[in-house]
Image (cartoon, helix red, strand yellow):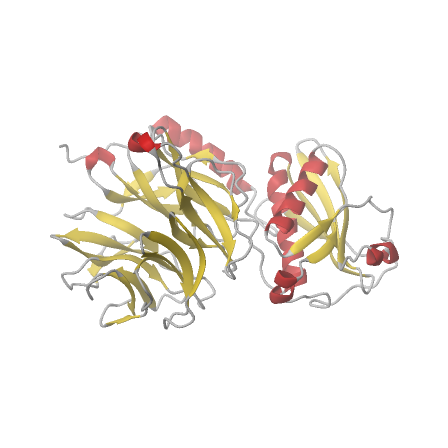
Length: 455
């Protein structure tokens, strides 16, 4: 076995990916998001609503989705932008888009009230050749006030990103918290027969669109994790038949080894500031948890119990780590200081627990649980109280929170019959209340990880 690591993708492929991602990232730099210029639009002859005037709580929207009038912004790319905005709002389960004709000037609020609408959108798309100007206004139907008015200008190929930004603005202004539509999900794309699948690191928009491969499938690839501070992924690869954790730079398409441990390194997770990675490393019949400083590559062992300690995840403030361990006899969830020390068990339900991940809001820890031969996916408070099962199935695992902590993406697999017939694996999303589960159009896929906004 050679001591050098063969690149996961050729240099020319890395250069091609770098060009593609630099072009995409060029959209996300200045203004509201890089390359996306935002200009305020004021309402002629109409009052402006103050921030929060039309705000509806998330709990209210869950029980009664907000009816919002969303007319077509035009034909061609304008209709595509309208469709993406409508899908973002409708698919989250908190809004009920209503089709209508585009008004000239100030909307007919009386007509919209008769439709039961609480909010309305107006606007237009101006195709400027290499760029688009999208004018967008959000109205409070009850008061007749303009809540938001902005004109966005960006490269024509970034029309989908403009649509996600507008959907986030609507979400934020009406619900009073940050949206999550302008984000992406990295995952493992799978192809071929179940027993001999090709796995590729891949990435897509949070709605399942614009999917692309990042690696060529030469080596088995698993468990990607987003860096919350920059465009970087950590993932496990069996390159040269030696399972280890690598870092993949989305801006350049290049990857590098994360520490050359004597054992197998796996289950990486970034710290909230993106400056270090916590991961597991095998040792004899068990595994320990280490942290690695990304600037110096200095490593620090923080568990040493003789047990299998794995799947570590930082709290949002970086002070604690939740992880899975069999130190008590069966796989359960534990919390400890990020610096190491004593660990406190938090899972006490029936079955074995794994795959813990801390919500970016800090209020919940998601997990998978195996009991009576079947999987469940649930959430609990960081002290172990309030455990709730969100969904169940043959296999439901690998939960990951969206940037505002309101939705989980996860992997769902079906049972296989003779010679693997009937087996399927895909990525689904579900609200943290356990409602509105939906499958993403990502094909055969697993191991999702949700980016922060604009990554």
